[in-house]
Image: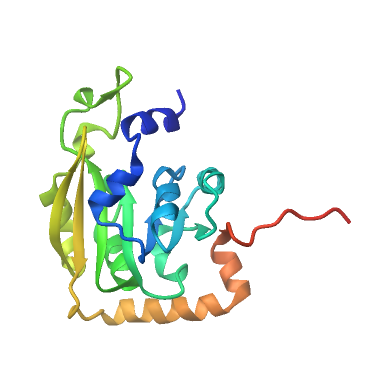
Length: 231
């Protein structure tokens, strides 16, 4: 069974999940580690602008097709590393979402620091996670789903990884049947370290260089992608 089938069965209304997380119409949102775009398509219908990022080109292509199918043109797609998110966005953003991936991030505090560099003051970082329940209890279509039990995190585990990067835990929302959303707010007065200021400045310079940007990531924009005409 393709993963997309059981994800859609688990969350038949992704827009409601996003509403519960606090997505608003005038926001610019980054969908980090977007996968096949289940939330990306809903975000594109709800938010002003969306940047969807994933390391896997095949996942990005599937997500792009899903967004194209709903007829929106406000989503930019990037093949790139989540740690390098500052290289892929032109200006500070309102909201960053990562769904079902944070448990597997090798350096969680590094990722949280990277997210902090792209958020506006008081911007929000939402992390959707599986509850820390035995995997055999989280079934879809009669089969256990989700990460191994030992990889699952409680909201307190997530806060311990994220808050040192300059966030406070603003709230936790239940996302039945098996998930929760931990919503963090960037501390407006939090000063970026010298290292992360340098990262932000370097990323701005990189975005101005077409050659370097081409080497760093493949960027596909639903608004501008066109089929090549035969010569």
